[in-house]
Image (cartoon, rainbow, N blue to C red; front, side):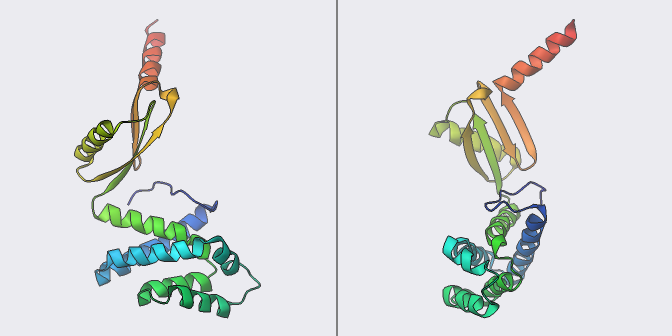
Length: 191
C-alpha cells in the first residue's frame, strides 16, 4: 500500500483519514476472506452515497437524534445490502463516524485497485491532450508500471510544454518549465 494522501470532501483531518483507512482495510480483508470484493465495493459505495446525501447527513450527524431512529433509517434505506456491509453502515452510525463513509469507499476502491495491479496517474500538461495523445501516454505509463493505468488529466499553462505525471508517490517531471529551470541552474553554476 502507498502512503499517498486521500482527497477529502468534508475537510476531514489526518486522524479521520487514518480511521477511514482502518475501516477500509477491515472491509478489504473481509471481502478477501469471503471472495466478494466487487459486492463489498458496490455496497460500500452505496453506503457512502446514502450517508453523503446532505439531508441524510444532517440527520445522521445530529447529536439530538437518538441512535434508534438513525438505525431504522439505515435499515430502511440500505436493508437490501449484504449482511456484513450493512453491519458496517450500522457501526458507522453507532460510532458517529458516518462522515467517513465517502473516504472509506474511496480507500477500499484504492486497495482493490492495488490488489489488481491498477495504478492511478495524474498527467498535467500545458494544453489539453487529444484522444490519441492520451491513449499513447496511458500505454507508456502501463509499460512503465507493468499494469493497467487509470489516467486523469489536468491543464496548467504555466508548464509551457511537456508533461508532469504523478503515479502514487512517484513524480515524473518532463515539463518544459522543469527543463528550463535545470538549464538555468546549470548556466549559473558554470560561471
